[in-house]
Amino acid sequence: MSKPIPEPVNPDQLVELAQAVMRAARFPFLATAEGDQPRVRPVSPVRTDRFTVYVANLRSYHKTVEIEADPKVELCYLDDKHDQVRITGLAEVVIDRAVLQEVWDGNPLLRQYLGSIDNPEFILYRIRPTRVRYMREWALAYHEVPFAP
Image 1: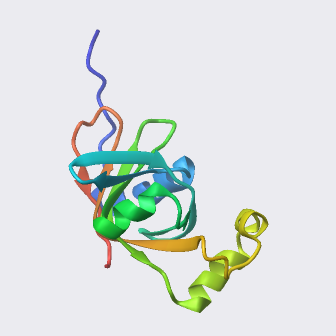
Image 2: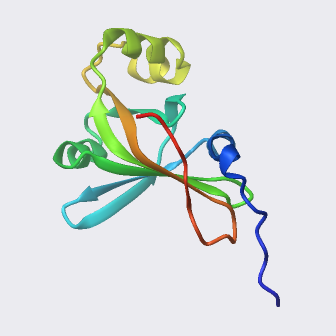
């Protein structure tokens, strides 16, 4: 069996290619660490601004403790063609009421589940990228995606 040959990647299209993977995949995997033990789980972003990703969470979830101890995280998006985007970044708690309100107003599931934006369980993380990489299936090499921090 011959090795598949990936399509070449035009460096000028990396931002668009990466964002297309993110739109198609929708549910990335979030990696955190608990001490020296990596933890990974699927998440559902509630907002994405280019490569800055917002993830809603409950304070009682274990990833809250993990992120408080070490805010370094990574998101991995994988589309149905097996192209992937990895966003390495820092997770921070959003306290800006306008941002919280915008996310709240745009997410009926949050409103139904939590009942009030002031529910003490509600926490919103902003994952600010420090590195973004794109890989086409079978390429076995990542491309650095330019982004403005």
